[in-house]
Image 1 (spheres, rainbow, N blue to C red):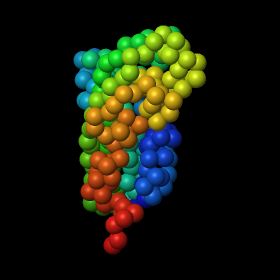
Image 2 (image 1 turned 90 degrees about the vertical axis):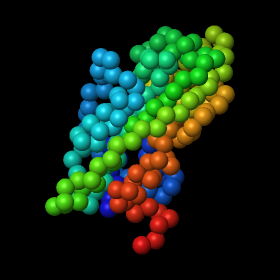
Image 3 (image 1 turned 45 degrees about the vertical axis):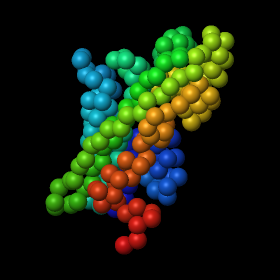
Length: 196
């Protein structure tokens, strides 16, 4: 079975490659607007399903899609609009614990049998250091926060802002690797360490 990644995220591709899986990237546009009253976990699960469903596939292919949200209280923090919005988000995260939730969806095309599908979600708690205005200004000036949900990247310079993670660290990067690999195995993908 061939793995298709329905994501342009280089981090998701790198995580999969790190365990010996080399996906083909195939992306279709999906509206990522949060629906009125939609909770974060429901939001990431829905987007993962929609992203996976938007990608065409054929028999022998397994489509993997994911969506990650940074959640502070009940607010979903997307990518900042500009530097001031990044500073606002970092001020809000400073000295607090927030949640990173990821929805993961897999769809294996099995020809005449129809597809096998599964969706899961994983949440991790991230504790931020208390940030001074100078530190926030320095980090925003690096440019890293401007295209990251929640205005930081734990796998980059933003890792210096994080005091601790409870739960999956790779989830905070963008793909809960242990849970995703279990899902892929259940859907029939030959994993690198499994001999058949």
